[in-house]
Length: 284
Length: 347
Image (cartoon, rainbow over all chains, first blue to last red; front, side, top):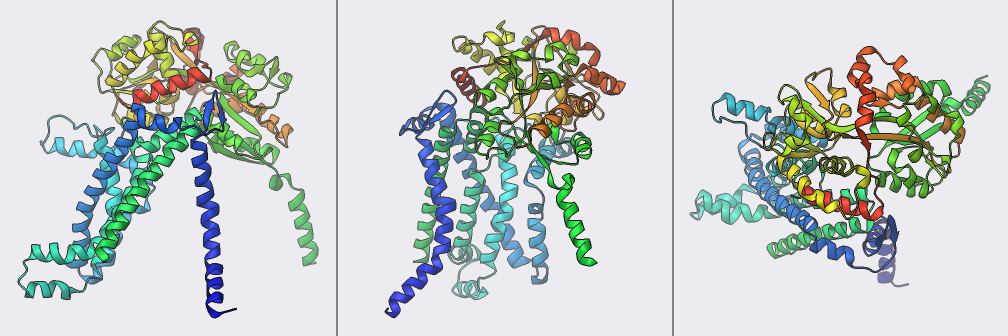
């Protein structure tokens, strides 16, 4: 056996466990879900079929279409807001906080991660409610005459999400910022660049991989979450995961739930392709 | 000596039912109160493993995905017992072993718990889906008429219970349609009043969210609520109350049965018998998750006067007379009702 053939066999041998894992725990279940999405309900029974009717429902029935639109709108707003807030926070920690305090600053930034997701959402409800901390503070300061209606709205959902994802993005962006050599900025300044130009043409492009990675993670986690919209949104703006849950828990309509899940997977895959392609271009 | 002691200890370990026998029950959250299952575990020397679920479809899916014998006991919406029997999920129960003679007569619910003359489940707890409210913020007289809810007076102060069957039932009763008379044909007439209710509401809430909203003053009224929402909050929020409007209300009921294929039918039956005994009923009625009336009327001897007052024990005769059962839709009507509900949620 040639050396190259032996290397190839060794390579396949090393990769085999990972391939088997992916096949067993992702490819097969996903294939089963895709297969189920073409089945149909007859009464309360699932009947195997090759019926595209569930997909037709997803894209033609208004409550389902609106679920997809709600998910995309909320996710887009949350991702953009989270990046806009996390970047300066990460930059302050990386460039303004003394090195010996940076670890503590990061711990403080991610401290809310240590509490339960559900508890954190209910805590936000107590902050944003009519009689919540925020309204009491604003009323007490005389800034508003009537309590703001925030809880059980899309705004509350976005606030809950942004609070969570700013922490995540801060970590990924900070990791990029601290790796940047200060010589890049110094060189740019020596060549006459102002602070804004240094940021726009040097720091931002070099840290974009971290931003895009964090933004992609935010997108994936946000679009797949149903707890925050359920608790903070007051069930008023159903998202795709909430619709999936309705089909599973209430209707037992697994084929329609599968079709909705495949659409959700497709949206996430598109987001990945968009960010992956963009990253490759930047690296080139 | 050490070896002999070790072998003896091992033999004891293997022989002890306390360490070898487990009962697996698929339940609603009220059964997860440790105070409920502890006496049974102690008496029979077994460990009761509880898994909570919400919605009959979810429960059926769990059973479908399990090995035969994996589950021993099932708690299910009383109106869905027939559906579970049809799916082969419940085993027959010996009717003579159950204390249904001590039950409130309306709660025997033979039409739901028996199929073809065979008993498959027994009612364990019940209550009402009606109107719960904060009596310091709402005029209680207004709550006597469902029409007030959509009059504009309470816009933005209402939560709707997120369960299509009782709320659609209430809306139907508001339109003069009995819950048993809801059909695919007249379902469309419920759309407008349902959407009007949603327009007046601030949120559509599950059990915990509804309790939180009422307790924090986020809303003042809960449509579909009842003692199961207010009773558990009574100590800290004595202002919360509930009433039955002139149009009537719905009666919810949950049943318990033995899962078909269980490998320990005797122990499972003992658990069912414990739950419907006055002692078990008292603990179930005042469970930490939500309170509700016990089906066994003899539980009145075990509950404290304070607990009975919160449950409004003495008014049950009147309440039962004014309550209708949940709609029991066939698969087609059920799907249509859920589609209407989803459409309402997206308004």
